[in-house]
Amino acid sequence: MTHPIPGHGPLQGVKIVACSTAQAGTVPYMLMADLGAEVIKIEAPTGDPSRRSSIFPGLPSTYFETNNRGVKSVTLNLKEPEALDILYKLVAQADIFGQNFRPGAAERNGFGYETLRKINPKLVYLSISGYGPKGPNAKLPGTDSMAQALGGIAQAYSTPGQPMKTGVVSVADETCAILAFGGMLAALYCAKQTGVGQKVETSLLGGQIRLMGWTLTTAMWRGKDPVTGQARINGTPQKPAISASFDDRDGKPLVFQLNRQEKWVKAMTALGFYEALSAQGYADLGVAMDSPERQKELLGLLDGLFATGSRDVWVAALRAADVVAAPINTLLEAANDPDVLANGYIAEMDYPKHGKKLKVHGTPWQFSETPARIGVAPELGEHNTEILARIGIGPDRLADLKARKIV
Image 1 (cartoon, rainbow, N blue to C red):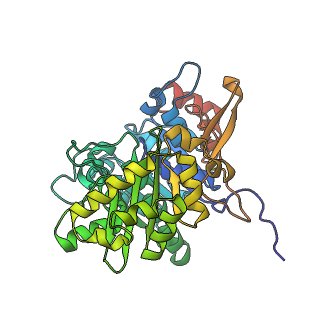
Image 2: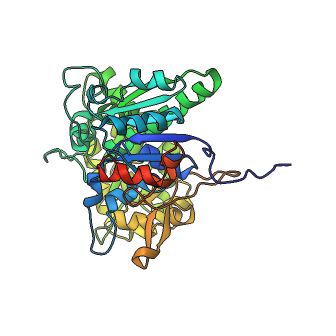
């Protein structure tokens, strides 16, 4: 018999202080807030600059809202010694501290790892940078597009004969954030078990390299870049594999993926293509392993066949044959995909201040006993009174600090 756990989220009771901005530096803590952790976001009295980006009239910043929901905002001018002293008192009560300044900047500003570990030896200290803490460019600023450019994803999604480009979605930021989230949890578990905290470092570039997965391993072992474009045709003549995308008669794209000859026969039969392909010498997918020319010919034949019908029909036929297939969604199509909605990956939140319900990211997890709960991003300094009262700062002193622009 299970007993319900009060509150929400598996991280309830975890306390985090974060001096972080931008996407990779804020998303790890937003995820932790979704899962019940108390996240105290330290902002300059002028506010995180991203509060003023991606603004629609009468609505909050989509950038700030997406990356900072559920956290608590406390303003501190960390250039002032009094503000640093307040930060130290908050850190003394925290499990995790995070920052995403260039390597060396936190140390120069009084909140480097060695300083904070003396205040709280159990502290998990997360540092995110652009290139990583070592190397010739360690001290340079980093951005999502820089990491995409260096990390290989531009080639991974390139089309032969066309220039390589970075993408509109911040995959380097988000990958780094998710790896930072996991690294913090691992270090937090260790700290709870041993009583010893530690510094965890990751970077935009490091996350992007990890994202390249086994395809990068293959390229390194072979010493040759992969063939890119609409398809991956690989394997051996005895065990061929294909992952490829095609447009239907209306130009709507889809993808299917399979390995093994028997799956090929099953898929092409379900689509009604097998007889035509057999007549052209492609009854066996392994034939396409012979040369790039054979692969190009096969893809051309499939292009023509898929262009004779509807994407919905093709996807349904492949899925009925137990072959992996899906429409290739645009961002808006993805936001309305039935599986996305059914699993709560997109949710609706009430924004009473703006008189609207708006679609937002849901949560990618379901916990049976401690469900996640998504929130909204805080107003600037919204939690100054609540949080600073815990360290003995009452209304009069708070008013004085505010007057002197320390908070």
